[in-house]
Image (cartoon, rainbow, N blue to C red):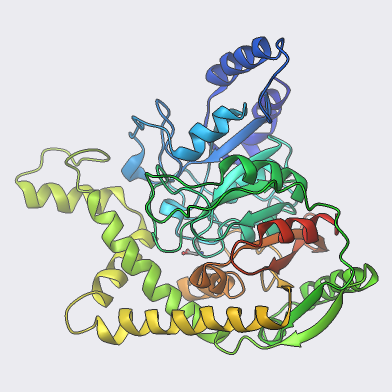
Length: 449
Ligand code: GLN
């Protein structure tokens, strides 16, 4: 009730929720409360959470931030929704996001932009900007986001919270609306690494309904928290401290690294030589997969349908023209082009080859060091309406995207503030580890907090 009252009071200014499920939440809380009388109760009994509106929830609208799905009520729950309910959490609703998770500012949402709670003139980041803003403003203790090219870490950094993108395959994608299937991964967004550990423990694990989920047991992610960092080898990727990095972000990250040195870690410079190719490769691969995934929105089975179609082709054309926003259309056009005959080898195949090199950069780096540290974003949160040109928006993703291409995990933790227009704007420290090193990342992040 306290959290719902807070949403009621503050979300008019933030616009972090698309749907608030107050009635269902209160009913679920009563059930959880009754169960609590027994000796046994699940790990997260009664903890309110919020879900990015890309995650299918039975009986509740799942819009993906798009007019296309404004009328879509999912007939089933995503695997992670089942798991979260099983551990006793109570969903307060569905959070705002860039349309179909395409964006880095939450401004492409059909439901209007979300505002950054630290400074209402700033964006919260995207595409999981609603989840980040809701947690930062204390509307909910934790939320789930998805990260295809930074969409958990970048908004978490902009909103001063902790966010973890797990290893590809660690968390089931079943019931999460597909953007770029070879990159998409859901993960926790919360105040602290410890809270993220609790959530990851709940949502991770093999799922027969997602063929890319990995059959590997889920560790107790809290077990390593607090383990000594003495001797931890930290690598600073040279390419992450170059041109375009805001001096305030640079200083905050270097200060954070000093804290780790004082905890006994050693630091050395590392090179990830193919970093400059990450954005071009991603912005070929992600739109290609998106153009294929989004072909299902045809106005026939579900989603937006135009009025009075004159024939089947007219139905497809107008339903899609009306249902999708500008950025989504741009991605579909790019993806369709790069996958078309005559261009496939030059673009898509080449991008996949580059992806392999980027992955190898990380594999090589982790032969030398335990974790990599750097900025999550080149600048603190930028102003609303500041980035009109799509390429300047894509460049925001410079430090986050390579991680998805490589499939490795990454976490962002709050590491200070920079001056903004209305208030101070948070800065994020990004910590990267080898495949399935979530326990270590959570421990390293935890000790900074
Ligand atoms: N900003 C990136 C994009 O627009 C990443 C989005 C995401 O991770 N979902 O594709």
